[in-house]
Image (cartoon, rainbow, N blue to C red):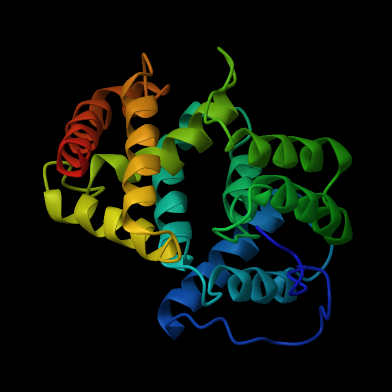
Length: 238
């Protein structure tokens, strides 16, 4: 992820920007952001921050890490919210976790966390919750929350739920195929052989984990279909 293009949710806060997202989705996400910011204690108009974040999520280099992914993660957080100690922090972390994204960079999560650390205090979010949001964003580097980290478990499970395929039908292989194709499109600059090698290594690492999901819901509903999907993609690559 890169901030060279000025992806700062606090910059030009009074200016509306084009999100590149269909109007209905953008409007729903803006309403969601306003409700989340209010629940988190924001004391400043959150609308300009939503505009900047949605613009970032619609940048042209994105094929998977788009506003559709953001909406999916938020929908999965709704399912897992009761598991989290601070659902508002988890939702804010979802908004920021890929707010800065460049597929050719390795510091995406760190820059996204730093963005949250700048923007949330401007909104009036207190220091403790800001720190928790930044911690959760950084946790998406590994998706490996510590035992008892219910906020981290909820965010990581929501982010990885795509591995199970269609969120309402885990046995639908088409949704996972679309996800895998979008990931390949984001890395179109990588030659086929190198991509296959790198992607296979990622899939083996995921399959080697004792658990992909940490929440009870994720374990019960997403673990088995996710492992089937990962194994099938690995077989196709190799």
